Image 1 (cartoon, helix red, strand yellow):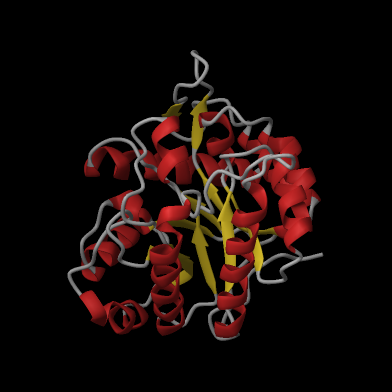
Image 2: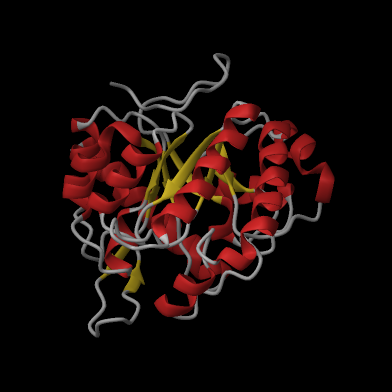
Length: 289
């Protein structure tokens, strides 16, 4: 079963096309993004909607027209919510996604805006963090699933697939949640490093559990936390505990043939650019193997 995203037939993605997350390059406008992509030798990007968390754009409301005219290929858009706090695992558990009941109404409004932006960009995929998913026996689970189901319905009405990012829960819990939601418009944006940063299991085994619903992939690397309840450490691709070669083979094994989009969220702009270039070279070696 192929899980490659739908794209325009005139601009198809070859299997495992390599790309970069726009926010990883800390760009402020489309020409700067295009220049860095040219420098890196790729033309595939997952683009930030323009929200405060994942980067604003100098183009403002003109971003969709500017991005579509730039000549690069976009795999999807990424939404972050104002107020999400990644200082510690505990702060993001309190503030991430749709986890806090008090922020759900305004975040559903923000989702509606992002769905419009996604369509304006000519895209059919929107990635975001759902928030920490409650365990099956948690009384708070039902209300959160109701909100996620509503989000899925909003996306379906726009012809958009929502891809929830992995890492803040085990693959087993995420699998159970997707099965409970039964929403054809809710899939997964798989990030193996997040599972290590949050210490939530083995990313290779997680691919096997979640395989049919993997819609897109962020690739970064990390080491597990040394102290329980603390962050793990994000490191350049190939220098951490993600077995990248085994990860790519696992993706092939579940039928994924979509793009591999590198993400780097540590360091200044030049350091990130250097690490992304290193990651792309390393990933090309893994794919050649």
